[in-house]
Image (tube, rainbow, N blue to C red; front, top):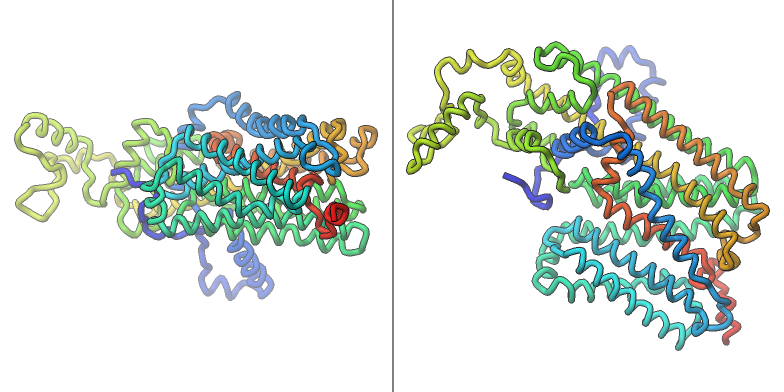
Length: 591
């Protein structure tokens, strides 16, 4: 039986499996070691990468993707994912901007940009609603119609306000948020109908989580531009380092807030958290390094980020080394699994050797994922077998006899798990079936709880690995994307209306972005180190792992990247009315 991604599931025990030392070992430890261990546990408890686990279905999908996908395709997916965003930004910037003092009639460029931003963000909201709330059945055509309708209505409303009140509209992307959301709701209602809206409203918990997620995203789109204004104000004072220290704090808080929205959807948590919070963080780190007034600030930013990365890599190295030793000890002696190549194959072997999970084991594992995958018949059958209630497992010979008997008796159904006259389960096998089981199968059934425990550790490590590989990938390509954007933009006529390009010319742009490029290079090196560690310790190909996530979550990732890039860059154009001094000089001129 296939479970709906939105059906109620047992509470999952999240987080890594910490082995609590026994009392004699604690007595031998010094106070310093105990204090460090306690501090480390407290720190890990705040890290989203240590608060979840893969589902078994996602594990099987990753193993199958890694086994069947070529290196060329994996590289193409990883390199090609940011390209549509970069092309969209260049297409938007190719629309010329006019002098805002000439009024709203002349400035058609800002209305084209506003329409593009509203359409992309509207599509992003609807796609997220479709994935996070059950009962939302909306086609790609309907999503496109909602986006186009919102673009037209939002632009008309903005033009009306500019014509009758003021232009530019102060903090346009913020002050127009409420009317924008009303438009999205209205056109979504017209698109899907009242029955679908009623179905969405009945799922209150899922709707609340989606609302919280949307509110957190809206808050970040306001908070990070405000942080940039604060950094620029502090760049000429002695408080620049203090402001830089706020960035990792904001990142930690927002990561944990958004993770709460996906507490029962672990397979979606890394992508949702990292392509939201880490994108903004990486983007504004690059901006801060570009605008930093001292080399000390740049060194502190890089050192803090590399220290965090080093601690994460050390944790992964230690956990993977320990787990692989245990798995080799358990599985390396089995006759049918002599030398498995990597962690994914060993975990698949654990699944094959496990009997059906009992209720306690099911409470600690997620079998079904909250998103669909294309699994092979073999993996689908394995997942269905693990999903059966414990005690209903039949050996292969028993299943064959059951099928033969069912085919020969068309009018009487044959029940595979026992007799109708007794409450005791009797497998339909011959008397010598127990003797026909291999030693590996018998040992696996006896040791199923231990296998389930080790399988849970594998799922936790894969969750942590996905968080790290996504974070390192994002922190490497975002600075490169931003540096190329600055180099291209400074040669366009609209550059004079971008606040982040003030004082940058085609002659000095190379010196201006060199620290950003150096930072991107260091992040790329840390990504390479992560790939080497995972390959050497576990045999897992992190590049394929990354490509798997990028392909599986492609619509969500592309929509997020496009929305965040357009919103972030839009907040730096004077036509959008961003003025954190709150003087709004154009209003005084109009008065």
